[in-house]
Length: 125
Image 1 (cartoon, helix red, strand yellow):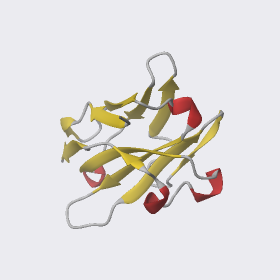
Image 2 (tube, rainbow, N blue to C red):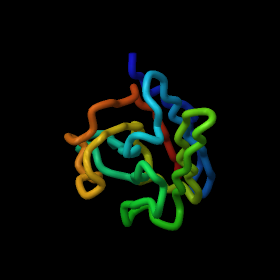
Image 3 (cartoon, one colour):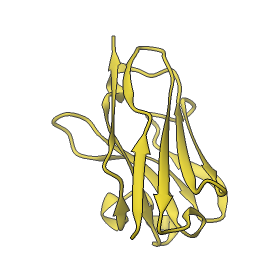
């Protein structure tokens, strides 16, 4: 059974950092494009970042570039999202996702086949 489980969310203050984890079972993350998306209250789910199967330069949404960093640990089969300088507008439920689609389609959530249950991040001002 393929499963993604996120953890690491919480309540923090503006300027704080958090590291989210996405542990995969039933699939090898090295064989998938791995992405992070988020959904703020009352808003549609939006792309945050993706990393390709073979690594390479990740693709970040402009809103998180230079503040967020995605990484992978193949031995642990886990993807991480390091979030620094958090702002109230980063408040959302964060989802990890996996897909086998081509890299060019990485930003569209409908192309991702596997999703975690989400972890909530709240940034207070």
